[in-house]
Image 1 (cartoon, rainbow, N blue to C red):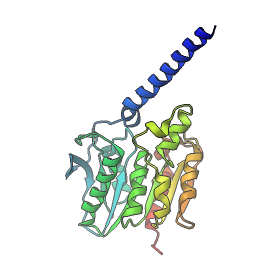
Image 2: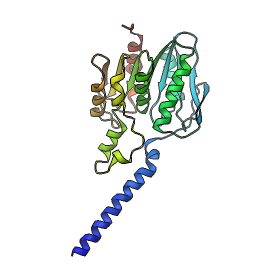
Image 3: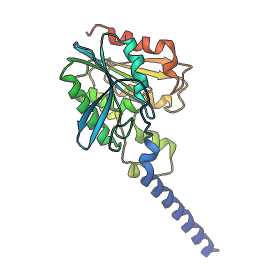
Length: 257
């Protein structure tokens, strides 16, 4: 009987270790979902260490620009025309992450955060006022930029507190903290943000539970962030609401205090 119990324990331990090994080995395939670019938006390129980034862009002379970081599996070349129509007085830049939309290299937290800073610095050479919009995965790049660069205003669409905390919710019995390489802990960057911030959240979000969005909101300094909830919207169809871009435009058009 004891020998059988020991044997079963060994099988369970081996299975558990195997699951951990698979999660560790394939975590970036599970986290990142690159898509090719198929939209009509004009492109620019930017060389960064280890990669060449494709940037969907609507160039426009003047001081103001919007830097847009899309969600996972989002082809930002299709998003750009909608932004350009809603913001005719601003230049628009929407970078394709490494491995996405024709950009070379492979995605990782360190690489994507460094690339976002490089794109911001590139845009800042010709525009003195840059507002940053980040959706879902892109919200992590947007928050980090606002914590480290002179962002005008910040808009976060369906954002999360951290990939680490979301993974711990999905895999409660696994040692996620030890296994996870890309953590995207926006909740740690948020207290350093001073730019006026708008959080646009989906009330029926099936990807980012409301608790993760609210935890991020609570991390901002008092008076920095405000929230707008679309109660019936889901994670991926929020932008289909007619009020979505109007809400962002009204926020970005406010006079800066």
